[in-house]
Length: 180
Image 1 (cartoon, rainbow, N blue to C red):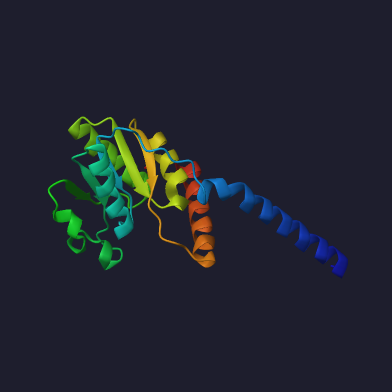
Image 2: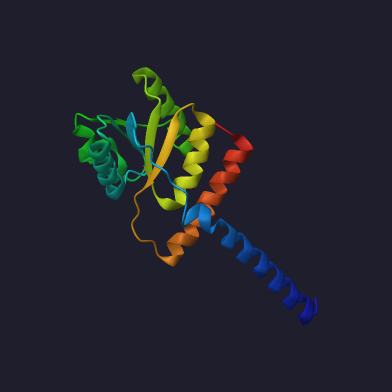
């Protein structure tokens, strides 16, 4: 391949990547989020980082919600196991392990808990990069009315790159496989 063709190919690939990244900024960096003005429960999606748990309690107090669900892992990072999360001992909190340990698994588990408790509306708490995908998956995998609230910590450029790839792959996987 000549240098001119190689340069044209590289420029084309770069242009396509820039368009894809630019088009996805509203999905991952500035997602449209809307927490319901009322909610039957607040749901912390995994991993249950402290800023998400703190925001869940704040929302519960603001909305007068008595139930907080926290998605935990039986085998992931030790900090995300139920016994490592102080909030799991709070009387308002139910920590649960989704099966499978995915956003789709969380949607199915929350839908079942909601059905058992006669809930219709939940507010999801997650990071901005995950907000759009979690909303789409919950809308497809449950009949619950859901809103999303973002609780973030600052990400480095490298972490944003990782989240872009991870969330994009998660969307593709969901579109190919659907709900668990």
